[in-house]
Amino acid sequence: MLDAVIIDAARAPIGRRNGSLQGEHPVDLAADVLNGLVARNGLDPELVEDVIWGCVTQVGDQSTNVGRLAVLAAGWPERIPGVTLDRACGSSQQAVSFAVASVMAGHNEIVIAGGVESMSRIPLGAARATGQPFGPRVRARYDRDSFSQGLGAEEIAKRWGLSRTQLDEFALESHQKAAAAIDAGAFDGQLIPITGADGQLSMDEGVRRESSMEKLAGLKPAFLDDGVIHAGNSSQISDGCAALLITTSERAAQLGLRPIARFVAGVAVGDDPVIMLTAPIPATEKVLKRAGLTIDDIGAFEVNEAFASVPMAWEVETGARHDRLNPLGGAIAVGHPLGASGAILMTRLIHHMRDNDIRYGLQTMCEAGGMANATIIELIAD
Image (cartoon, rainbow, N blue to C red; front, side):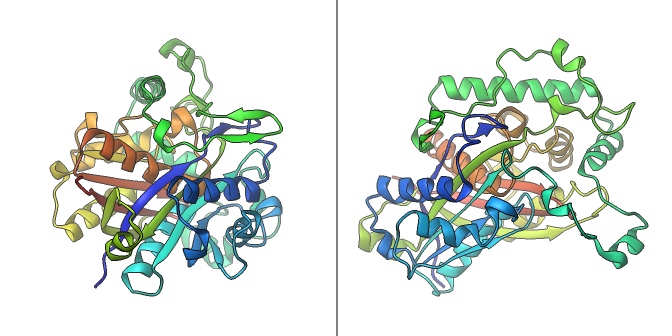
């Protein structure tokens, strides 16, 4: 079987809600990232055989197959197809998995995978404005009219005995790590600055350097009157886009491209859809088993910070070292642009591994419906 390698991963800076990227149409934002990715690698877009794109809320500006439209907006040949998929928050991580499968199966030689989400333009929940999204049989099976990620995050905190103070400490640490990473230039090599009507955005703009335990303590619970989950220990609503260039090691050598990492293993699992956010735990167990590795073999983890309780419970159950978990901060600090987040986390992970000579990295994220993806990659030594 052919292998799959990642030549490069790049992303736009993450814009906060109604911030610097609010004026950018998601199709054009995706096109800018596509063009930036191929330009920095000297790759002729003619060689790209497919674009697999994640996007969660596919209505309005993000409707009508944003992946295909991004190819056209980039000015690439019309013969290059594009597809848009939705596995909730893991959409672009799944896009990477599908791209990997495509090149390993020999269906394509060069594929770009990624995703985009403009939550400033398409509000969270916009797709549920009409109709009955869960259907009568799902509602009957679980004896409920809707499913709440926020209540799921509260239930996780309760089951794992996580106090509000512990959750807020984790959130504050996320901001501190992200600020330190920005100051150290840790993201510089992965960012594609975006120039729009509001000027140029060249760094993630959601980090709150002035955050403190006192300020977090003053925020009201978001889902339960006596709850522990609030805006400050939850992911930020954001705009963003990221993309990865995927091929085989053989094709990379032919083109003179030097891969950063190779795909080792990937899984997608389902879990309880009511608590909804625990699936990263079994996903991690499954992907480690498939790769023949242990948790201690992994030098860096990217576990999406949808809510602080999610990676904290994951850490308890897996026994992962805390200093290897989200070493550059996470979505609490910089934001969670839904369909782009999987590719953003993978981009951060790959560059962090290269910068710090880390052999194995693992990415996982919770997803609506009680699902999770998990992926292990290996650094390719110079």
